[in-house]
Image (cartoon, rainbow, N blue to C red; front, side, top):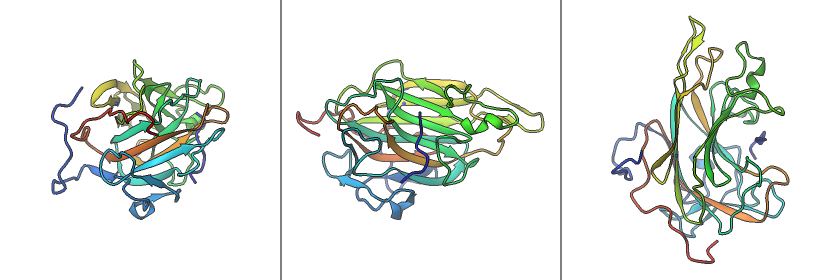
Length: 285
């Protein structure tokens, strides 16, 4: 079970699946969720996963997360982490499907879902209060990308993700429109690029990047972001977290989500070469 639960996607023409024999030096890791042996493929801090064969995007299955009424974490599958080689830029792609009648938290936050952490923290550090935790999640039907760095409140140059409010902070970037409004599969993509720092001069630039795509369409883009200060000049992304979570009292009803065809890389691969946003037949769960 993951420690420290958090409190708190340009259309690219010709995007395609990468052939098996094509060089993939940019791929940090990928997961097709065709079976439950995730631990054998480098996942850790979680060991129970339910793979279902009900309309996966590709392959034999997809990962199911099902919440019971009043739950915070899913009842059938656990969250987990996956390390990858350190890099100053990461791209994420996965497919997400929400159950029919999905309802949101009623608040401007939650559910949490996917995250990145950095070399500034250990492989076991909780994501709730870190030197940098990134968020990729659907909130109120919009795509949200963001970051927090609560642990930096006592660092020499302080916080980079905004002031603490109620014990938490966050720099958030939401899509302008509601995107998750049906029970079909949708392709979620995100790019994060660390801003540059000059340790000798003790300065850092506002040149970090965050971009998000939904079904191949650019819906979030900022190129003047500060992700780190000179306190962490060697910081790089090195850890991905899959962490579905509703805060206590925020789950409005029993509901389920599915994830498939996850890819973490250093270049954008784009959606798979197939239809996305497919709505299952009525009554599909």
